[in-house]
Length: 535
Image (cartoon, rainbow, N blue to C red; front, side, top):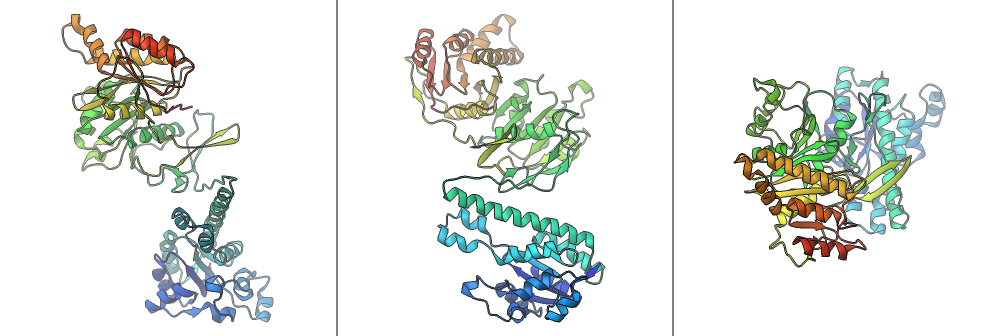
């Protein structure tokens, strides 16, 4: 244990700093401070020694020089056992705690400041003090984040103003992490301005996962940050610990519902939406999404873009007397849960219940490691460039909400990707999808077969009229492709099933042949101009 006899406090973010300083003062610590921080502490009635009394020099150059000095650096850095006599001979007083957070470079970078203005938000004295204190953690405590103050206040109170080596070690690790991330962000931006982009990733706080994609693979989870995106802000409200595959599927589920304006439900299996629907009422959307492929929905991850009501939660039938009726899913994620819903979901003890806003922490870039190399791209945030009717037979007025729904769906499906979507009443539903096939014909076949199965399952009329019903419904549906059709074969197949409206980006050297086939088959085709490969 080491008692804090003198603390140097110089912070940009002053959240909680008064409470921390009051506790230090209560235990007899001398407070040394600078500028605005010193003013804030004095306003709270806390005695403060100005940094200039230690450095024997005034603040200078518009505040660029405040804390950098032989006296301050030595007071932080000298080894408390080995160097004690030398420090005394030199007149160096020990600084036992450094409380410092840094100029908000990211905040001002994001405001678009020019370099000459932005450079003033590059902190120099702060990182110097933080690194010095972190290096000498055996004798000095360093606090760099307001969220760490309360635990330190409690420990100071419990130990008469002293902190343990364990705490100082933990704070040291946080400090080095903070300065590393800070410098990385500045370096990346300067490289960007020079036209030579760089990426320096910063993740900390690893959690051990049970295993990776398979049981023989070890795996870790890093939550990410607002800068990198990730699952920051996610709250686990129940169920087993999350697995590697859970998190991969969860990302797909959140992305599938985030851009849909209507209440929407996504049911994800192996990263692909096997069920997706939007409707004015969330429970209606859930029913349609589940009906899209109830077999594949077994063991799925489900995301909602609206608070989960009890009516919708009961669609899972977790307490049904027939166990076969209880829907087994891995995760239910929603931005909020209405009263009683979490308790109901906990009836399934393994079900992971997550509170998370689908639109939160969506990064601007997509990063992927391939054999150790890093690929970086902008996120796929644009649905289409144009809506160009290229066939003799038109779609009539395009149902743009349905088209957007179809584009969101196809964007989430592994390429080659084909989806069939329809409007049913005031709702929209994914009828079928084909994903991950090495050729587009196979994906088209899978999507259409699934769509037929979905429609056959919902038909409850005279069996003799089933085929006609299916064909009529497909005639009202939209078939959306993530990329161009290299040959007319997929178009001919779709027409044979009854599809009458196809949306694709275009760009094939055989576009004319494909369009001609559509004209021969009385199928409307619209070019969107945007491809949505997802590898």
